Image (cartoon, rainbow, N blue to C red; front, side, top):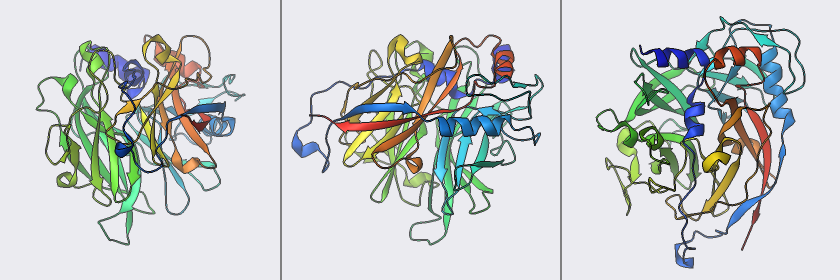
Length: 408
């Protein structure tokens, strides 16, 4: 295994900094004609935001709890899904397990520390009860490596019928498969998108199906991985994804979208990809955002539907993208997208720290507000493992509450 990959595994820098460095904007276009709009589609922007200390503190409390030696103490790639019984399943990419030592403190001021021998696994899942308290970590890694030198990072998930029309429900989790590689692929070479099926209520992994194999695409920077975010509309699930264009020294990556009938996320033949003019099965996806030069997104973006408007959150373009979240809007998942709209810079635990992977959590949102998480890590990865272990307030999700407003 290359030394740089070993170093990455030691530092615990999940898809995080890769996603932070693949920063985005979206296509800047004229407003669509009224005939192109969905009903109720209007421009949206961020009107206000505030730190959500309750959720941030809960992950600090759980991570600092030394009562167990095999549970979550930190991770990134934060996604969540509400289960039918009211529990919330949190999914993480690279994760530290073990124990945290020393006294906890306020967020950003904890003097607790993690042992240098703390286990690091490629993925994990943590269960929160209906009252908002984290209760347990499922046996980790939840999703085993598909082959030597490859690993799985879970991304978006949703509860859906086991099959169309079925009364039995399951959890479907999108997975990114990456493989060890040489620079510039220090965070792994994108390989495939998979879908795992978890049983309910036991959350046992029943199966993993590969829905889009990209290993035969010669240029790794052109390989598309789906699942950074899901949006349900009618009988469809819209699945967004991106490529790794910046690893090939392109200024920005591109964004893509597929759609799958409800209940069929685990069926490769049911996936339809936007090819630039329509939806097609087995087609080479065409970008909906990004020109490969000055516009695009990081693969760590999130999309939510507010009325008839799709709102996209990502890190801002340029140097501000390591600290600043921005938003865009569209009347359709295929675009055109408009923005950037108003930016905001969430709090960071000290200098030299990057924010990345803004994710909307619709199951925690409501009453005109959206709950977003973002991950934090050192901007420079050299020696990051020791720094993360010495400062456990890093490499844990933080949360903000955002209020949107319609604009003319």
